[in-house]
Structures are given as structure tokens and as C-alpha cells.
Length: 130
Image 1 (spheres, rainbow, N blue to C red):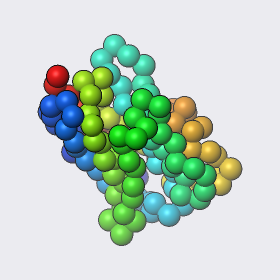
Image 2: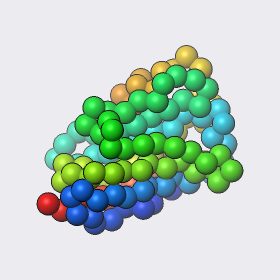
Image 3: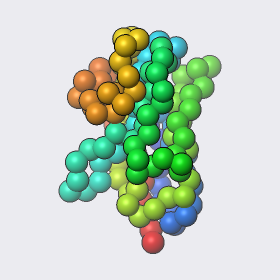
Image 4: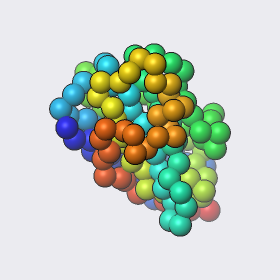
């Protein structure tokens, strides 16, 4: 199982980036996926999570209305579209997964349980300049 995040970079405030998380070794159809971020000197934050088996997609309050998580099962890829970027969005972004998710696990629980995710990929740096 592997998760590979990409798409980070340097962008001005107000700009957009789309992160991709390509997964291998399992399919997205029964999985739970989350995007997490960690800024220098700060605790890790669950940005957005979903459970393919059910539940309402979770977004952290800090990104609601600006970020959108989506998936393309044919490409085994999960995306995080980030619009209206702010300097405080600067962080290393990771994707993480539970390949066979329990239908009862709610997405917000996933985003508060980074170390409960079965697999965690390396991150991609997002830097937003003011």
C-alpha cells in the first residue's frame, strides 16, 4: 500500500492549488481518506476526510467554503482543491487512508484520528505568501 501526495508549491494569497493523492494497493470504493496538514511549530490538523462507505464529508472550520475534497476512483486518486488560499494555510499536507473502512466511522472521527489511519503518505509542501 502506498499513498503519494503531490501538487504543493508556492502561491500568493488568494490563489489556488490542487493537491493529488495517488493510492496503490487498494481501491477507493471502500476506503476512508483524509487530508491532514502540519505547519511548522503547530499541531497536525485534519483538513478534510471522507468515508466512501458513508457519512458526511468533514471539513475543518478553517477551510470550509474554500477547500473541496474529491476522488476519481478510475485513477485511484483523491484531490484537495484549495481556493482562496491564506498565509495560514502554509503547511506540509499529507494524505492518509483506511483501505477497508468501517461503515460506522464518521468522517470527523477520521480527521481527529491521524494515527488511527492505517496508512499515511509523505507530504507535499504548500506555501502561501502574503
